[in-house]
Length: 389
Ligand code: PHB
Image 1 (cartoon, rainbow, N blue to C red):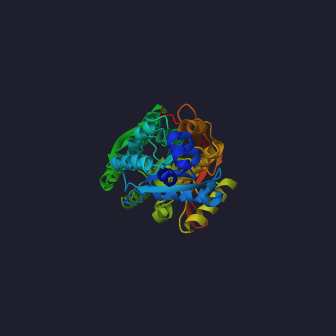
Image 2 (image 1 turned 180 degrees about the vertical axis):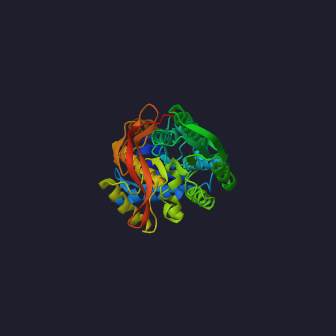
Image 3 (image 1 turned 90 degrees about the vertical axis):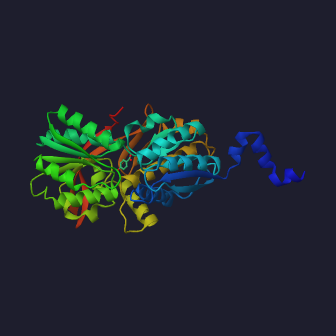
């Protein structure tokens, strides 16, 4: 009798009937695994985007409180990411895994999501193959082939004939290089050289110098956003490539909105292709930016990682509402597969065959708008799927 009282009737029901355990929960738990420190800080923008969504829509859905449990992998640390996922599932009993700024961390967690049947919401990691690693993965960011192919098509059509490519030497960089080289050369362009920089502590100077010496019309660049984007741009300026008439093109990670102002005027004229710009003009983006500022202060600008955090959270709320707060991994995945929304970036939908996002990819040029640097969109590849699979 004593035991019965201390466990409580719901506890007993829950141990006898797992469905009752689900019904007994008063919270919906989201385990956020991402990179918040250590030079790779994708997690900061992802979490800012999540917070913006919760600021706008509250912290309750389907009558339950949404609880975030956040873990910092401190950069690319697959073993740590995997351990966090296992702990969040076993100890914290999370309903969703979310975050994942970097490919190595997402790849390491995929088998854990499969084993536990937990939906895994990717909010940045962008190597094409990731979604094939677990049927419980759905991606709200982009893939590198998806961002890159429009760049190759645009470059080939706009008088750029000879290009040197520089990418970070890990899966998203290789996805980007492969896509660009194939598509650009397929449309008549010439790639003079392809170089790769290490993921950890890259020294861009020798690569940028070699690129300049090859006398291309443009350098194509992929780095994983943030600090590395800023340090690449500094070297591009110091080595005088602009003065030599060499253009800079690439997926939008190089003109990351979070660091664009800090890069200064060297970034002016950089042409990139991507799905989100803080300068995107729409009612949804205006509302997003307002909520982002309320949640995170006025000093920071949302970037592509923030919009994926926001949209991923919107999808979690939508799925939780449809399941009346009773989260079941398989039922949730069936709903994610039919998800469509009007995102701050434009219309988005999940491709049920790949669980990857379908969205517009915009062509943008860095320009000054009201005295500040922005990626100004001027062309668009609508309803663009990941061409990587
Ligand atoms: C990734 O590791 O998948 C990644 C990280 C940063 C980016 C893009 C992709 O900007």
